Image (cartoon, rainbow, N blue to C red):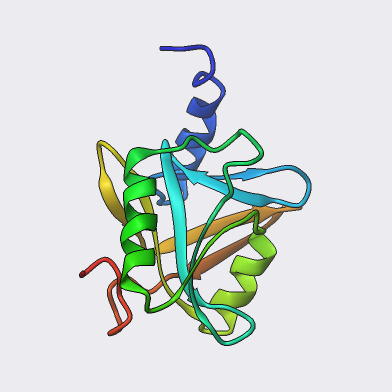
Length: 147
């Protein structure tokens, strides 16, 4: 096992104790959303401007791997032309707000081994507080996972 994965083992164990299958990796004090497990992470939501949008972290920081499946999903989404496709840094605060306002259609990880994997809940622990967020999974006619 490479030494870059060693620090993730303890956090993965804690996540399993909380009933989670993967860790949603956040970056910096802003808690930028990066990846889930070893997969790229995407959110399909209605953004604050009222637009349907598929969002994923930007590659510009260099901490996100440019996955082949990630690129394929983004290309297919753009070809569909039905919603905005955005690559930018976004925070856990934005995700929390969207979940609370029922603006999230679905979230999923993309990766070569897992292809596209739905996320049905997030346990967010910050400053000693734990928040559980239920995420819709293929619950609406907006679902990208079913296409």
